Length: 219
Image 1 (tube, one colour):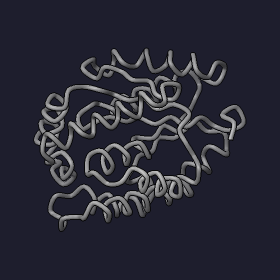
Image 2 (cartoon, helix red, strand yellow; image 1 turned 135 degrees about the vertical axis):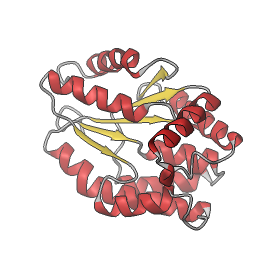
Image 3 (spheres, one colour; image 1 turned 90 degrees about the vertical axis):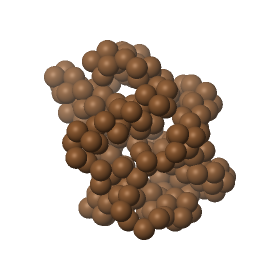
Image 4 (cartoon, one colour; image 1 turned 30 degrees about the horizontal axis):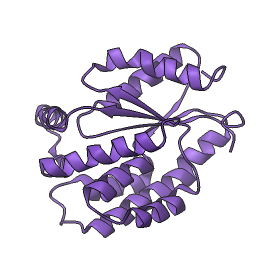
């Protein structure tokens, strides 16, 4: 589908503690002030089914999940999300800002868990119904810094019910970061890579300018 004929689909990606969720909301607020009212959503958890799957996927107190089962659960969340939220919103002309999408599966289950990338590509293709982001904002920073942020955030908020991924070993998160950077290198026209050592306030302007440069007249 042509981005001019429908709403824009913008995804935010990054390792744990990269600040992508905070930046997404800052971008949404800035767009709202300029007259654009984007749809804000996330994966997993953008639908009622996704909320239930999120509890299973991210809670460290749930039983251990086999990598292939984890892949399929994320794919189920995505298939429902695309069908019920993302595609209908885009077809109505809305801009959609999504916290994680298919690149996360490639980075975490592919590079992180070591599942076959061809399998992940096939599963993602089915779950996404062919829908790719128009722009992906990738927040990159050293893994240790990101994990320190994420774990401090969890401790401060008392939010350890979603810490299963955070608790993986450092080498796992290093592989995830490598996966993200490899994806960005392969599709430079889609990715906007930002230094997440900067604050969300410092990153807001590059995102808005990136949108304006790529989609003149649409933002």
